Image 1: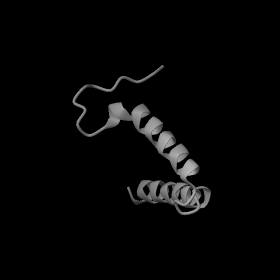
Image 2 (image 1 turned 120 degrees about the vertical axis):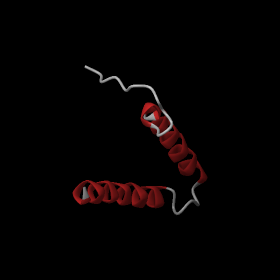
Image 3 (image 1 turned 45 degrees about the horizontal axis):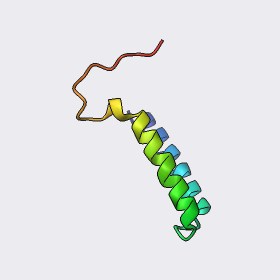
Image 4 (image 1 turned 90 degrees about the vertical axis):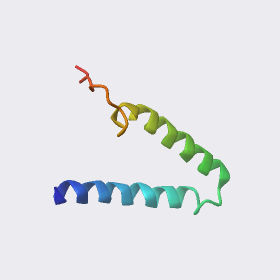
Length: 61
């Protein structure tokens, strides 16, 4: 369990640093907008895995 948690946190840290660098700590409004769009798209793709989802998740073949 710790290994998985560490891997997730390492990936999160890498993405966070990339976000900070690309958006110049939020100063570059165009890049902030692009990141918001990217994050919204990724969340939409993961929607079926949200905690509130009571439906069975179907594996894609």
